Length: 230
Image (cartoon, rainbow, N blue to C red; front, side, top):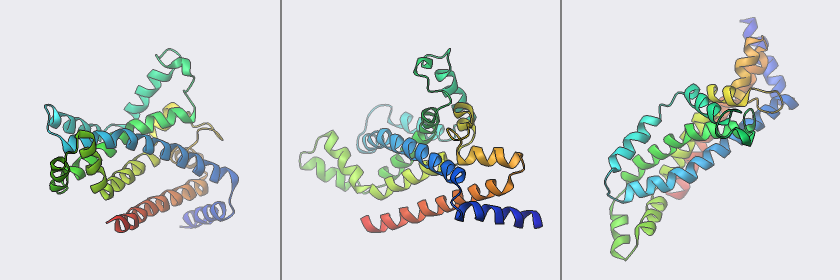
């Protein structure tokens, strides 16, 4: 029990004392996770809008593919990105391996299926009369997709939150392609794994507390924004 109390005291000292290394790790994690989530939304939302608003051959196959990819193992994604970005890989010339950009790439791949699949499911459940009315008024495919996105804005917020929650706690891919380099590519999840194994329980616990608070903040934020846009 004393071990836990000592760890908690150390964690609070790091958080409230604004330890530079501690908040540097938090800042990097937020930066790469938010970037990956925004990119996933930028790609996934248009796909979801088209799938939800139009009927075409292969529509259900697309839905099945994205639903399946939601369960992608993080280490498998890390291996894929590593293979592409390593010196012998097709994108090795970019020099992105073991950089924050590589972590963003891995997290983007992890977030995209979640954001897209949840957006598709939510948008398809909307009242179809909105799209039908838009089409009656002469809206084209693109305009109909925009109507779907506007009507489903709360659903899209939830999809973004789910995607962010998936990548902000990701470990496997971040370690493989980021290298867990101090002051450069060390994220909260990789730091927790490393520092706890080294006996730095206070740092690991402090980062864990911040992760929990982030998850709580994201969920509260989505509910507040959802209530505002309804």
